[in-house]
Image 1 (tube, rainbow, N blue to C red):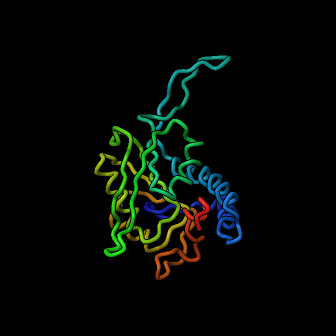
Image 2 (cartoon, helix red, strand yellow):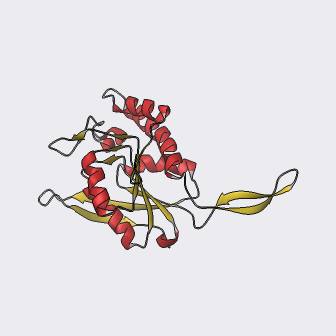
Image 3 (cartoon, rainbow, N blue to C red):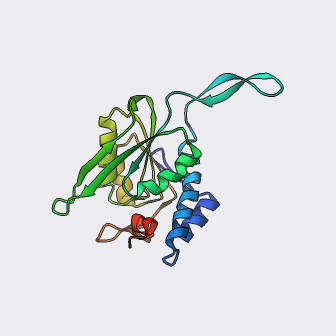
Length: 210
């Protein structure tokens, strides 16, 4: 654990992740597990949200009660696989505003190319949670965070299911101020940039396109 990286070692997170890693897990079950695990990860990434209080009436008395402070959160999905995490986090924070970042990798240069970008207004006044199941090379993730900073965001957290050491290092180098919350730090990347032991291509397994 560090200020930059939080690994959520909760027993339910680890159990569900093991089920997701298994190659024979069906698309429907994979999708359901991703939704469930995203609730638990969202709990961790929102642990230190700013709070204030407001006056309310319970059925019995008036009281000063805790409530979230500031603008609604912004959840930003890094397309397309980010949508799987996004759905689960939205169930926990239904009032959040939602944005999308679309990037693809140029096969010649291996650099991320932007094809879509739409985020809520006043990003500078919101806690921003970027979601993408896999932090592999970190190039696309770092590029997405750069775009979010260009839109004004200053308080950004990155939520992923799996991370590779290479991706964590790349993100720390590019964005040392962005905390990463993940269920596991795996061993390494293979020559194709897949996380090992990993769980394959999260998007393909989620959408049944493998």
